[in-house]
Length: 585
Image (cartoon, rainbow, N blue to C red; front, side, top):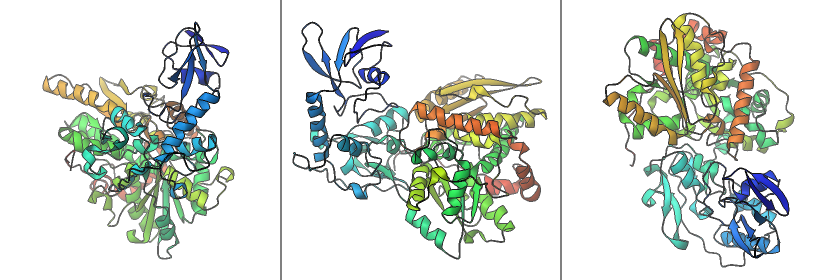
């Protein structure tokens, strides 16, 4: 432990802590802009400057709190008139290179630069000459929008893209005041290795990286008299949306979401958790078939579109290892416009299906290839992120926090506990284990809580003993930056002719899984991930049924429509294929 003094208060903190860490323990707020808990501190902006007073001479030198490690006997001053003036000047310099169109900005009201400007009372034009970058807006991708004029060169997006995700779609170009952040070699995002995970947008403090806003289009379509508007929500949305309306992190809002969607004009409200149960039936059956009939192993999950995009660009040799099962979103779209459409006496083109997702890559996935039109129409017509859905609720004047709960519509709404934990890292694996055990042994798993798959370790490994000599080696990987190591391990084992290290691997592009996907409420950090994941596990615990194969409506859809998992009809509607693609266009 290191002993130091901050603003006259003594505190002991762990060795390796920064001044910023120590101040937080004393509930002292030091303003910061480039710093983010998810990313390595690199002291870019200078707003977190504090004074480090030499105990021998009494002289103070400036230090950046986010990157300065505490030392024994350190004496720190975090706030005084000189520091306030320095921080204010830094903010004025940043604002002199920043557009003043806050009213039209997607981040207005949720912008960290705007918040600091208000906090420091910067209500007038900056003292310094305004010089903008005058860079064109890059909206070449389906979802991500890059407005470099609003970039403050804090570097968060670069760190998220390169360090967290190992994608390297964006970088610094130029020097000094000519420095800009953007796709490699000045190209547009569509020509970069970007996988649309949205972590750059989630970690950007301003409106420099945002998402396309399809709200107006959705409102128009919902109002069309010749269309039947239908909505479905992803597992993790229910654990995060409440934060947009002042509810504590990790508050489950499932029933309120159903109610809000009906108030917005959707005639039918379903739940993608149902399709998560369906995914487990298809994916689990596929895994057992590969294990028993000499199929390609290890098998990778295919629920995460950013991971699929990453694999199609980086791991061509491993594409046969990906499960052919579509993601729950796409399965939900397919059954909505076929199975349910038949029961509702509707044609696929008469249904307008909106999917509420935590992920920016889901809009791309909805149009990834022709398999996403398996119903004869676009299976999922439009995707709204959690943030966009929150904006739609606010626009409609709905008091979300005080809504009464309601239920999803039958027969593709009710779900099991296995379906809801899909939103947390390890959730797909845990849900798959519950059903795979039944498929392999014919018996039900006594303890459905498979805890080795849980938690925030970047790579989790385990061996499942099903009895009778049947053992399955599994791995759970989240955050794309952790993928290369495990792929290298598999490749080296294959090259050396050794036993394969894994049979089944879950990969999610975002740290923590979908609970902090690129479209979730801002403020990503491990504290949020833990709370949101806990809400999903709570949802699982409160359900009477915990296994996908026990969902009576899943049994019904196979009896009435698909016949059995992995049937010819199931393959047509619920499975997909993958294509080798170049890293750079």
